[in-house]
Length: 630
Image (cartoon, rainbow, N blue to C red):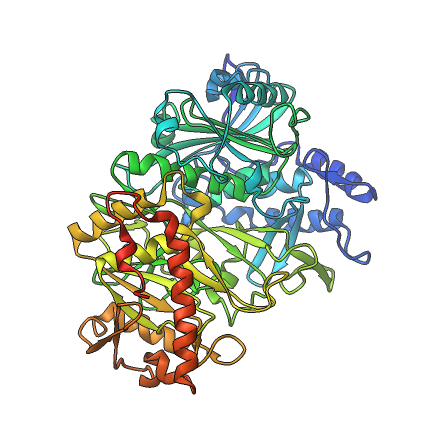
């Protein structure tokens, strides 16, 4: 099986060196100073917890007992086993065979490429990268990402290549921060040199985008198995060896040297020793100093937000679902607005929960999985997410507590972070839409959690108003959600995703306007926030009320309803909908004091107008005229 170049191909779950690795892991875990992932300290667990070594032995035994039921070829009976294109390259020619020698990485002699989920689970344990958590629906690997439990936006940089296309089109600001080609070269060379000292690496070739016409080919080079596990969950996996053989040159490559830092960050004029740097023209990125998985995901999303508009297509930070009749819908919304909950509809199939594109053929998911928050997670509140946490999911920065000798996730313990996460392949969601794409959307829903109690539970928007609210990207923070918040505070995030926009927000609005005009999609504003008064006085919209509004949009009854025009905001508000209290539909009538409502409404409208001043006169159309009329 050893070819002249030193290649060994392993297509099924491998246990090579398993006994030796188990002993090594047990020795490491027995030490009080055990670390994993190249020096990152393991997360704290209760002193009385079962020793990780015995847990490892237990799970090894379980896998041996189940091994006879596992299909060893492409005839596997589940989507999990359908992903079976893994290769292991061993020898001095490994880098050349994988193709990373073109990056300058030439010295690694063992490369694991596109491992199966079973192999990843075994590698994670053998490498001592975390723990096996006993989630209710199945054993799930859990990791800790150190001090970074979220993205580090101030450490993300784009290379400003003088005279290039990106230099002309990027919206250079405190999100898209420029750095120089010279700084990138130093960091790139440092990342390559680091990998050339490694005995092994994990390489993953994948797609971003379910549309064959508009997708991008992405390659990740990682140090650890769990990192490949994360991107295997989150991106679209090649399912046939032909797809990998025909992959060719990737459109972009990410070299993740997370265990290294930039000691020269001050000389490089960066903000810290953490660096996440993208060079669009060279089609490469490097990551230093942060282990957070989301840097891989959102970095590529930012690139899709550059590439697609250059081709005339529309990237979106939204969820999407489709009905049995092919009626598709988009859900835009910031954190806390109900985007994930409302797009998970028992009568409709989920296309995706976070990132999508819209090209000439329709809408499509960028991703092959989901990345959900776990704070206060229960099966009652988020059943789809809760049940998706089983083998092949990956828990990130979630507290583990010993219960009867097992490590059980505690989603209510947020001493580590409130941003605990789980990534999982989309096939963990029952009844998801397998093509992960659909026709042009019938409905576009902008979700907002209005803590001022001013906006109606549902409003019909003209195309101009849709652009105004899309650019505004409004929701509100309430007291207690962040330090210093003592009253409702507006939160405007352009296009419902300002942190990931590579171009000026009006560029995306122009694309959305064109799509709506061409395909006749109807836009709606849905308030999942407060009614009858602002936060602390009124009440939060019930999920039943909001679901009834969404149902009325999707079944067409909202479009046919009688409406009255809001005097201040100008949109049309239905006067009656099935399952919705008519007093709630008209927010002013839901308040006990109409004068207080008018005062608060004018206050909120002024906040909208103030925020929109920076967009006045920008883009092909000045959408200011479609905002509140003060």
